[in-house]
Length: 64
Ligand SMILES: [Zn+2]
Image 1: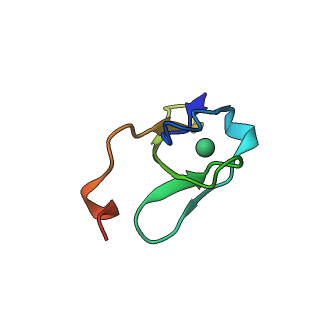
Image 2: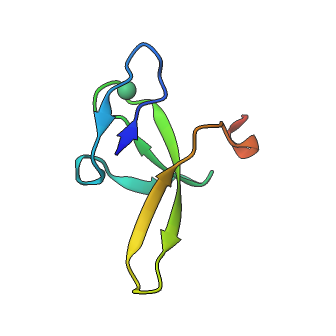
């Protein structure tokens, strides 16, 4: 479950609701409601399953 970091939005999304992609500044998804960038990190379990964790702090590479 992800929560949009745009405070005026704050919508919650399942992984299946969003598209995770790399726009050159790291993995992120765009909130389907407001379009805000929400950064995530990818983890791989020993079973080979890919999971995503939301990054709650704005990464340094997001400053442009
Ligand atoms: Zn949003």
